[in-house]
Every structure is written in C-alpha cells, then in structure tokens.
Image (cartoon, rainbow, N blue to C red):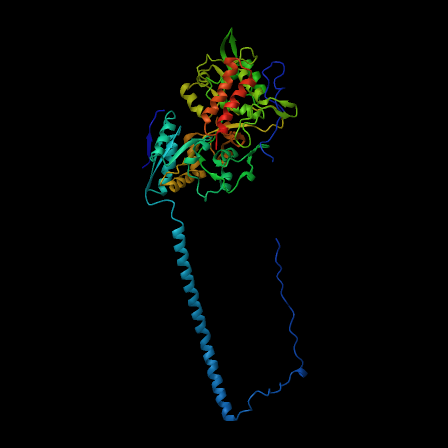
Amino acid sequence: MVNIEKTTDKEATIPSSSSQDIGENLAQKNTPESQKPQTPLNTESSATAPQPTEAAVSTPPTPSSLPPTTSTTDSSKIDEALELLTKKKKLRIPFLFIVLTLAVFFLIGILGTTLYSFMSKKSKPLVPTSAKLTFWGLYEDELAISELIKRYKNLHPNIEIVYVQKDPKTYEEELVNALAENRGPDIWQIRNDELFKHKAKLQEAPSSFTIDRFLELYPAVVAQDLLWPRPKIDDSKAPYQIVKEEISKETKIYGVPFFIDTLALFYNLDLLTKTDIKVPPADWNDFVEAVKKARVIEGNEVRQAGAALGLGKNIANASDILAVLLMQNHALMTSSDLKSALFNKAIETAAGILPVGAQALDFYTAFARPNKEVYTWNDHFDSALKAFASGQVLFLIDYSAQIKNIGNLSPSLRFDVAPLPQIRGADVVPVNYAKYYANVVSNKSPNAKLAWDFLLFCIEPDNQEAYFKASKKPPALLSLIEKYKNMPLYGAFISQAETAKSYFKGSQPTAVDEALKEAADDVVLRNQPPQVALDKAAKQITEILSALK
C-alpha cells in the first residue's frame, strides 16, 4: 500500500527605456562563461627442412662407451622388456589425462567458491528484506509521487515508503529540528540554489551512479547546481555544456531532480488580438513595443497593464527576472572563486566599457516608473499573478507552475505561453533561468543506500515519463526534453532547459533574492539611480558570499 501523508493544504542589447533608441546602450553578445593501435603481425614459416642425401645416411659408429653386442638369449629378454615398457606407457597417458582433468575442475571449484564468498561479503544487497523510507516534499503532485512509489513497491513489496507533503512556510524549521533530533526524513527536497546551504547534511550518490552518466541524463544547469565542487558552464553555443575540465575526483553528486522549470512569457490571447499584435514578442525590442500598444493609462491610473514588471514588492519572481536580464546583458553574477558579487561592475565590450548591470536594472524598473515611455505597472496592483488571471495584464513572466494556478483563479481566461524574450541579434545564444527542486538523501538516514536506490529507480526514463504525465511539470531528463519540447502550453518551458542558468547564492539564497528585489524597489520607490541601487545589492551579497568557508 502506498502511504501519503499531508501536513498542509497548502550583437544586440536589452532595449533602452528611451523612446528614441531602444536597445542601443547595452552589451553585445556573446561572452561565454568559460573558454573554452598498432596491429600485431602474425608470421608463419613455410620453409621445409632439407632432406639428407643417400650419401649422408650411414650407420653411425658405435661409441666406445656402449657395451659389447649381446647374445641371442639376452636379445630376446631385452625385446620382452621393451614390449612391457611400451604397454606401461600406453596405460600411463590416459591415467595422467584423468588426473589433470580432475585437478583442473577441483581448482575451478575452489576459485569459484572463494570468489563468490568474497563478492558476497563485499557487495551487500542495496535493498534489504524490509525497511521504511520517509520522503518529505514541497509542491508535489501526490498522485505523481504515489505512482513512483507504487512502481518501486511492485519490485520490493516489503519496502514501505511514506511521502509527506510539507507546508513551505514551516518546512525549513521543521526540517532543521527533525534532522538535529535524528528523526528527520530519509529523502527530502531542496531548491536548486540551496546545495551549498545544505551540503553538510547530505549523503552523496553511490559511486555506481557516475558523473558521466549524470551528465548524459541532465542539462548543464542541473550539473552546475547539484555537483560539488560547482563546475562551470560553456554557454558559447546552445545547448550549454559543462566544462569537463572542471570535474575532478572530488566532484560528487548530491541530488537528482524530477523536473526543471524555467521562466517563460504568459500572454492573454484576447488582449493580444485586441491590441493587434500578431505574435508574442521574441526579443525585448518587440516586447517594449507590444507593452506600449497594450497599456491603457488614464491620468495617473494604469487601467490595463502591458506587462507585470518593474517592482520587487508585488512581483513574486522579481529577483529571478532581474537576474536573467543581468545575465542576458552579460553581467557576471559572481567571481570565479564564488566569494563576491560582480553584477554591478562595468565590463569591456565591442562597444566600449559599459555598465551592463545598471543598464539591466534600469530596463527592468522602467516599466514601473511614470516618467518612462514604457511605464505600465505600479504598486496599486495586488500581485502579478492575480492581475494576469483577472485579465488586467497582457504579459506575465513566470514559471509553469502558474498554469494550474491561473486556471484555478480564472477558469475562463484564454492564455498561452511563449519562450522568454531575448536580446535581439542574429548570433545571440539564448539565456534562460532555471528553478526547480532536487531530491536529496540525509546523511543521518540508516537507510541511505536504499533511499538512493529508490531515487535512481525514479529517474529511469519510463518512470520519469509517468511522473511528467501525472504532474505536468517540465521533465528534467534530456531524452524527455527532446520528446516533449514542442508540446502545447508546456513546450516553451521544456525547450528552454538546455539554455538555462542559475547562479551561486551561498548559504543564504533567500537573502540574495531579497537584495535584488530591494534594488528594484530602491530605484522605483526611493528614486535611487540604478547604479547606486545595484552597488548596494552587490555589497550585501558579497558580504554573504565572503563569509563562506
């Protein structure tokens, strides 16, 4: 029986905000994150030994040491002795063959018994006769998890697996307390940017699950997030690849995801038609023009927003949206030693030294500043999600999880999803942003090997496909990404996984997110220049990173 417990209900640039020239001031693409028998000869001799001539054949002289010729009687005795000796030799050959054969079988038996005994002691079975695993999760579809558990129990009926859906508001506190008191779950979930925060609590994957196999299964962002030491990504072309020189003997696998979500562009189909926009924008220049066409402003009141962008306080994913804009505009998020934030620094480009970070923040916040031509959003809106669901906004940038939430809030709303807009340019490599949860194993679990056996079973392609169909969460496996990347509504999220990034947030990911959100609000609500606001955020994040050991 599957047990489910629930504890809660639950080169081109970013366009400038100036009307005169959208897109002239930003960095050009593309600065990658990293730069990147002899065949033996067989010979045979065909020569025939020379035959002696008749003249050469003669009876050799009798050596002086030989005894004199014997008499006729002695000769007959010798013949009898020779005949007896010949019979003994004929009997001895099969006897020796039998002895040698028996000896070989005896040695094989001893060797096999010894080897079996050695292997039995060395390789204890991963799955015990009976055991119980506890699995804590967040935001999971319980039917999808139940299906995975049921499939595993079909193979191991004496293994009990209890899934517990946790409340995100109390999850962290419950988890820390439970682990400290040795009553924590065997398997639990961390956000993809939380590995460093929790690594000391985790049991690494077994050596049988190799790094090469891991890299074959998942997009590069998963390897960067869940391997430690953290490897670099080669983003010079799509799909991204892990720089394999970054992998060493010390590199370990600490988790596996069941899905990968990415930011994409939701749009209201009716508003798109009403505004006479033929297709959703693929780049930020077209996005700006679409926003200006769609917005309706009466006096100081925004009656219809072109997009939910610009602030930190009422946009749930503001820090992620700002982060991907920074990365698209070539800002470096952190130093190579992961000790400091660099996104506020100007960089050298083909167009000169540019403050690419400040440009990205200026672009983002322009949508919420009344003195900008793209002004379309303010703090009078309750939240981006609710405004979109109620038909007040044309564009929403969010994750696939909101498909279900929008449907619940407004079942009649007609909407679709397009890929996240990119910087305009023929040679631009897309930059997207990933967010997902990874399944990890506690290093305090008495059944850590069993827990990993269950997780590795779950990520087999057939099982992951069943999970995807039940949960509708974008698949994590490359094989399923390729299969479903053109799927209606979900295809945009799925196809972006291979060009998705994240960045290192140390042991305080939430504080890092809040620093970026606050930078947006500093510009819009407190009238700080973008560079000043970004310098403040970078300083706060550097203090977090530099404190790490």
